[in-house]
Image 1 (cartoon, rainbow, N blue to C red):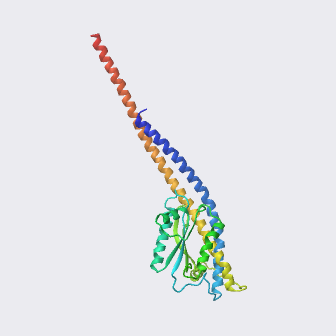
Image 2: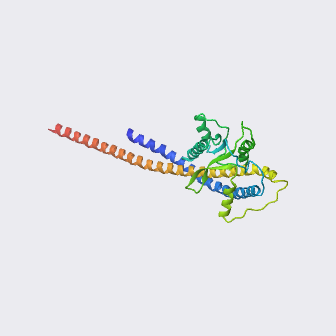
Image 3: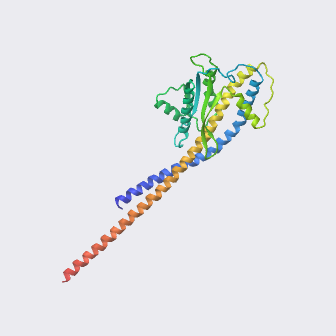
Length: 305
């Protein structure tokens, strides 16, 4: 076997092994998408009803609460960025980071200082490489988040929105995550969690033909809002984590399918080159045999004379 043919065969073996890995990762991601979608669907009703309850309490009282009260001149905002812990998911994390950068620029143009909180090793690595300050970060669960993870993330954010001092308090809470639309479409979005926009919720309910429920508050509206604040933030973060996880699996499946297809095309190309090299070797061997036979015949004919 010629040297060139050996090179092609080694490359074909290496690409074939890579193709098996990417195919396995594609199948794993595809199996996890369904579970993630079910969790998103299961969490959505709770988050929706909780938002409606908060809106009903806020519109039915004149309570001054950070959950619903706009600050006249906001000066500081907290941004929670959700990325992935692992790579091989195409532009999933980079799109979320770009959305967070656009949000940061917009808030800065409004004269607000930005405190950054990050979920996922990709986001942590991005900010760490650029030596940017991160208030807090969490890693290790982005592909399969639990409600306990949302509670851990929500705790410092709730403390920051409730702290009215200039040293550590924030006036707004924003979240940047990847919204799961379909298996082929995932959009990086930013949304303001706090203060809750009552006009937007009322408009959404009117558009859907819903009527906000009426509640009686015991012992008071302020106490009810205090109890609902952590639940609201936790539910919003949990829903965002679940949507981000589903988006991550979908993005990884799409990236691994593309890698598998590319590996298959490369194997076909290398196989054609290997066949051409083998044919060239066979042609050279035949030429050498024919040349040798012809030289032997000429030598025999000369000796007969």
